[in-house]
Length: 360
Image (cartoon, rainbow, N blue to C red):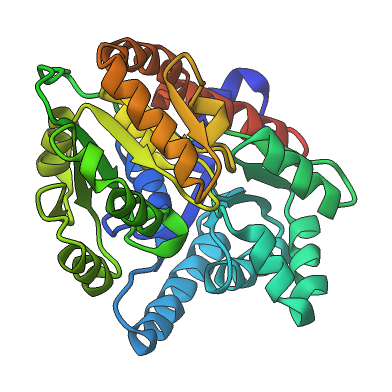
């Protein structure tokens, strides 16, 4: 039994599983922060996006590594699995059941913003999905709304809300306000992330947006579709594609823009919003998933309904009327995001692991 006074050593007892933290994506971004901030970070990557055949081999090798750790590494008492939906969930299910067979405590950390759709689409697997949710010792989710949802699927209310951690930059330099206002979209270029709603918004309102705003897009995905829309509607002066950015390039891009926008159709707790808030940015986002936890109307940004272009117009016109609001909202973002520091998130994990280990 691990006593509470020994809880500071819990990380050596935990094996983390998830996509490789050097690849693209929200879960990978979270794990990258864990890698930087957690001592004794025991980690096995279960996925490294290449191609379907390669991924099968990669998971097979990861499974063998996983078996070795849980059988021969006596320090490992908890397996913490980071999952999304669909294939990601099924891979983690195999590992979770295996961990339970070998007597390990399990934490299933669900990042997916589309889990409800996944469950609805998986009619033949619904019993199995609920079985896995019930088998995990603890479920971690990203908002009170998700906690209520997952508690409704399990026999015991065991969901725990844990914030995603974000690294704070050493220096924050706000760009001087000069028209046009620089608006940044930094995420996957897909329909569900709301970018194509934004393209439609800029197309329909091109006349009054021109000269007042510039949309900078960074990310990967449906590039040809995006570029065709920009060309067909002559939006080149309004929208610029920056490519996929990471590291210093991403930090510079966040610094250079005045406001961040993400109008997703569904979400968990987007790392891109947290990273922007840590840079002191005002936020325009949709009121889905865990976003309302961090974006507060009249404090640090605006919330709109997914796909509601009229609401977006109101927001952009408000910025035109009062551009100084961006700096005020950005300062408030910095205050709100302090609760998402790695130290505070690690303390929360500490309490979860300590509770689990005292039950062994």
